[in-house]
Length: 121
Image 1 (tube, rainbow, N blue to C red):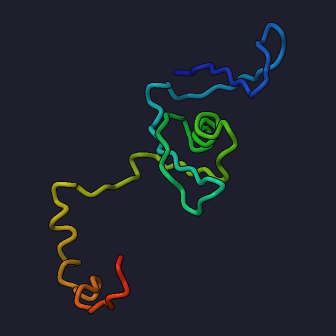
Image 2 (cartoon, helix red, strand yellow):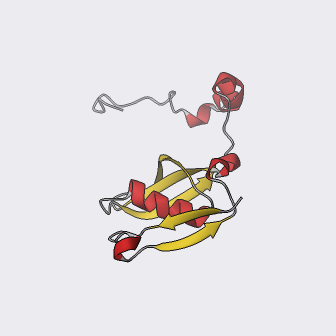
């Protein structure tokens, strides 16, 4: 099924008054994959998950993420990842997953004697 999509850029005027551009895609909007969006702010060094959106491809996802999540010029970098490529742990299995870290006492320095002058550690 060919779908005709009208793509407007910021400031474009409707077709009857000029502006805008047409392009065709072979995908139906109901089959567009879900993309997870991560934005790096001007103050931070890490990307933070800000939301999700549907898009036909990665370039469209970046453009849509820019329009939706960085309207006030607060981002300096955008990452988009197709949701099907994300693998998450099961919260119900957290005990089994993190159990190996419990037997490494050197990671938790609870056996050190702190001087009396150190109040909050």
